[in-house]
Image 1 (cartoon, rainbow, N blue to C red):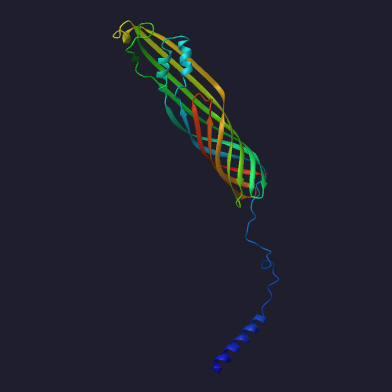
Image 2: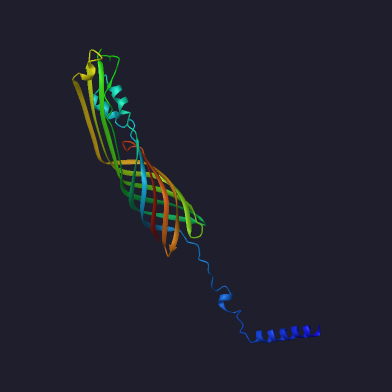
Length: 278
């Protein structure tokens, strides 16, 4: 037992002598907090600009979109107006896909972790959709107000091509370290080329059997607008990440609806971009 106690005592004396020979490191800056591996959180306040690329889809509903043109082709008080417009309602829905590119610029204000801002956003592409209806001429089995039986045919088409989309957004985000998730909403503007065309044939006879082969009266009308200004609204969400210096990356989803595009148009895009904060 005495040998064990003596050995422990000798070891303690040796360890103390060795420690006395080592330099005192307590005053080094690295031990006083002079160096930290933590990166300070990004500040998002200020003006910024950037560029972006996108891919998305445009859903277009053409139902009833040529009713006014059909009425114009037939003129007032035409007895087949109602029936021709009901055939024109056969227009349907379609979806078109398109890549686009553009830029953005805005300003952020920051209060603690809350970030509020305004932004102008622009995309250029060609979201184009076209719909055509050409049903088999329909023979009505009861006479119209003129006492004749009618066989009515309609060829109707409409094309909408949206080439430019701009939005004015209000943004609200919450800073989490170097990340800024956000939501936005605002007004949307666009530019589109729209063209429409209708051809209506009306064959009438005193008997039902003769109506399909009777001579045709043809009504036509066309309409075209180049560079029409569209308006609507936008909403979406995204996130930004500060990469280095004042360079940040962005990823977001945006929904745009136009209410005067010659069809019911809804555009959804996902996009990525790079920006610089001044």
